[in-house]
Image (cartoon, rainbow, N blue to C red; front, side, top):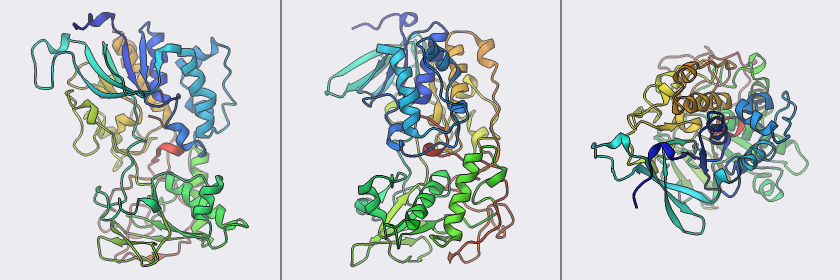
Length: 468
């Protein structure tokens, strides 16, 4: 079967999440026909997996302007711009209505398993750029098909590929065998069955970002409740304690994000959680009673825990893009031109420079990784960034480079500093406000002053209005 002429083809958008659906709205605004391929059975399928978690961005910050315009034509009214939606609110009150307006342009149960140039594998140069993209799709019923596209926008996010507990980036030894007592999501403690799993038990929380804050705060709430006596958190930090450990606090320009860090601090101050600093997990073993024992790279053995919550960030699934020529940073797995702007060693979501199609472009012309996936392993993504990305990309695909290059975005500053996998700055001292560490990390009880506004604002998927 010969592929149709490229100019007559739609743009394939992978993922019906916040950024993917916004991309479809911007493409329509440019007069370009989108086709959204979603592996799940609903819009925002992955967002619904953290429906119980409240964002620290408001409705005014997580609704895309082009999407709102499209929805308004169907009689939709945005919820209170100053209110904070949960993941379930975001999916049910915004994403699904948006997908419904897009109609049959959104295909559910359609998992993209490969993308290439029609008739060209990765190594073939001849007439490559003139060929349309061939997108291999596997449907929920097992049926396979190949669809063709003039361009491909991958907004599939990173939620489905969480990072492991192991400090080396690989799963800790024994991590897979202990899967029955490990979760990589913030648990829904309002669910009776989930609540019973953690109530009265000792739980390790591995991670240093907004998701870890949320888990610690939820466990502390459980400990304070009538049915949660004896609930205890053990906060595993790969770094030490500094003035910015708990985020920007009252100085955070995203107030709910600042409050989240203060809630985590309260959990520690009140004794509902202890912190283990400078601990990089090497082994997860079993005690005789079935509980888990975490062993660090330095040989330390922690006291047994009943459960482990791993919240060490996410990473992109690039497997189905193997036949494309991508130019990705060797560390972050983000587009090379974008990587220096989002490096968590230097930047937060509030200090990332505005960027668009040029920073997102690859040697394979017409392919764009957008949304959380564009950030690779960097944790500092905001929904507003994704909206601006796809506005620029849609204009570029339409050939309006003036509009595509007019990238304007102002983001809130301060918050959590750096990524979960980063080491402290050598020689930094505890309490200096930088990434600090103790010479001999140990179990500590924290009673630090109110967290100072940090220079960074890391945002992990479930709690910041970031998107895939």
